[in-house]
Image 1 (tube, rainbow, N blue to C red):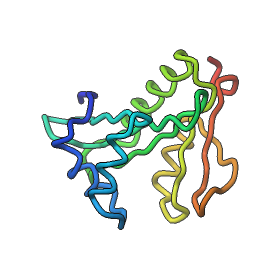
Image 2: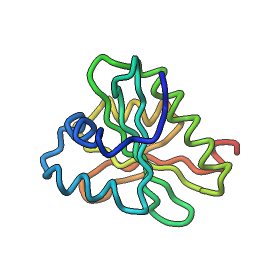
Image 3: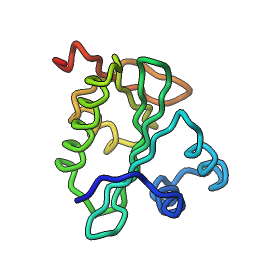
Length: 137
């Protein structure tokens, strides 16, 4: 398993993993914004998951995660996301969060495995958060 910067050549594969119904061009434009950091989790050289960190504010980072079916276990993915979250807190962020569609139970489970707690809703999505103090950082 290898975590590295997601190259623009892999944007389409990451978009296809998400299954969202907005156009690919919009997705690619968002990933190119300076407030987004895009990573790929590769297994055997193939993209297994896309992890995008969105800088919501100077102290809040939002995770966007898309995973290819049956490529990486939840435990390994949760550990990778937890390591990234710990790095964010060490770098000065106070809150890590995820906005999850209500029907996506697997993503909610993953957020809980990473120590996040559901805190409400925003634009029809469930919001999961953890702050630096709750993380023990």
